[in-house]
Image 1 (spheres, helix red, strand yellow):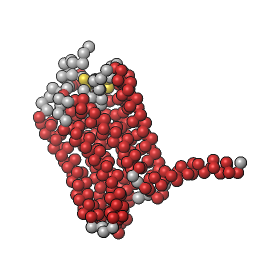
Image 2 (cartoon, one colour):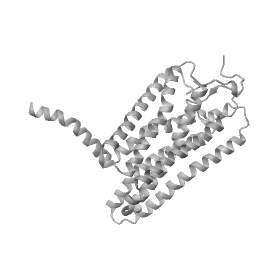
Image 3 (cartoon, one colour):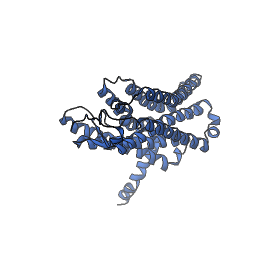
Length: 320
């Protein structure tokens, strides 16, 4: 039976994730690439969370947000990567209807939550640089918890609405989703429903959700840049910029990949898949690396952990 077959929404029990349209010999290479990236994601993000939890010096709002960022990166990449790797070896490449709904829901939840969390982190950097004397008062534990909880709440609301809108469509054109996971645009292509009203609602919802986070980030950095430029010493400016350069790098990578993916015309589905790899796998892999390589506190924490591990063996060697 081919991919194309006529059926009503109520009869759809599974979908076929077409994945990358490459030769069979490249599937092994792609599998190894996905496996390597996912292993780095697991190691980097679990390691980052462990460092933040175990080192008391990192008990600050910035690292509270960073720990949650690592948690989100770990889980939304785990929604995508394992199934994609399985499908490199699978001939059927199928995913159940319930599995597709679950994957869509969780990915929409975590990716939007990350956007709001990055906005909260931008606000944190704004307070740290523009109002340093009031930082501990304004960025209280209660406010930080509320910002993180609010990020998850907004992500959940978006996910419920997007999932409900998407999976009430009729999928009678095909079972084949031309992607390596269940995403909005490939699901649109196989729907035989009138998508005009849906696209208007989805666009409005995306605007309401994405626009505030972008505005918060841009306005925060406008104030940060204005404040930093007023610092007279070069060393002071360098130190101030270094505290937010990691965050700015993460924001640029994530939003750059997302905008590139969703602004790519439908006639270039393979290009969209490459962009999707960037924000579903490459971004979660890079985030802990960016923060660990460019952050003095994290590097010191890693150094202390390594020294503690080597100390017993050195002690034994000295007295042997």
